[in-house]
Length: 183
Image (tube, rainbow, N blue to C red; front, side, top):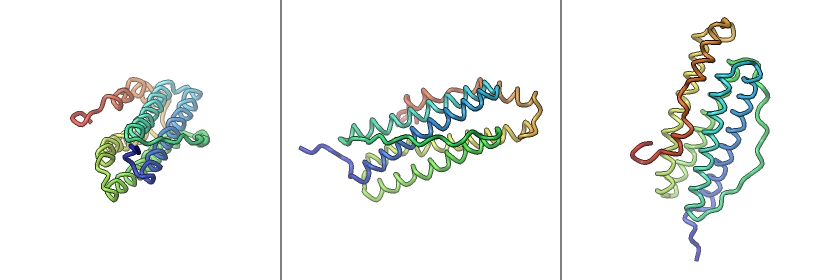
C-alpha cells in the first residue's frame, strides 16, 4: 500500500528546501570562521549558532517529508561563497541569504495552496513566521553595524558590537521547541 501523502512535486520542493537549509548552514559556518579569524569572536559565535539553527531547519524538513511517507533526497552541498571583505559584506550576505530563503519558502506555500495540501501549508506557516524573524535579525545586524560606524567604525565600536552579539539570544533550540501554540 502506498502511504505517501505528498505529491512528487511537493516532495522534491521540500527536499530542495532541506538542502537549501543545509547549504545556508555551511554559509554561516564559513562566515563564522572568517569572523573568528579576524578576531571577532562574538560575531563568530553568533554566526556559528545561526549555522546550527539553519541545520535544525533542514532536519525539520527532513522529518516532515519522512512523516508524510516521502523520502527526502540529500544533494551535494555547494561551496559557500568566498570570504567577505568586510563586516558590511558579511552582514549584507546574511540578509541576502534570508531574503532568498524567504522567496523559496513562499514558493512552497504557493505550491501547497495550489495542490490543496493543507498539511504542508500548515507546516510551512512556521517557516513563514521564522523568516520574518530571520530577515528582521539580518536587518538589525546591518543597522547595528551602521550605528557603530560601518566599515569605518572605531575599534571600540566594533569591540562593543562584537561583545553584544556574543551575548545575543541563542535561537537554535527555539526552532526545535516550536508548536502551533508557540511558533
